[in-house]
Length: 127
Image (cartoon, rainbow, N blue to C red; front, top):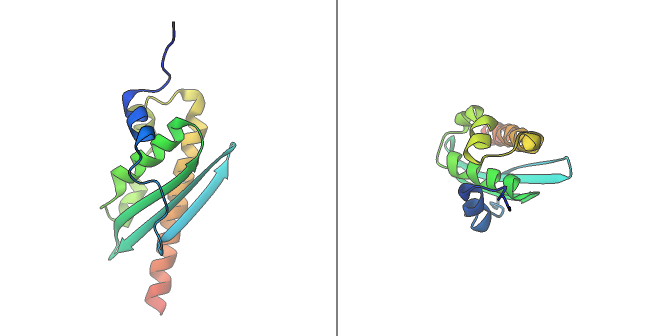
């Protein structure tokens, strides 16, 4: 008996990630932990996230989670990044509890991205 550890959403996001890659000239955050790395980049205009991109080195759940984040937050305001919750992605992707730490790395990267965006906004206002 072979039980597939990945649900259909994980397979779809892993097989065809629409947001894989860097956004040139945007804010960038990078986090590495637990043998995996996540890099997020964002183009922001007038406080709104116009484009998100990611690079992820990890298991299919991590790559799918990064894609899910990008799909969920692209087009939203920067302030809404505060609403990112790992519990929703864990449920949507049926991530096993033993991989919670890996998804928390994504959460840390999202927080770092928000800080990088805020820094860019502050620096642009000072110029």
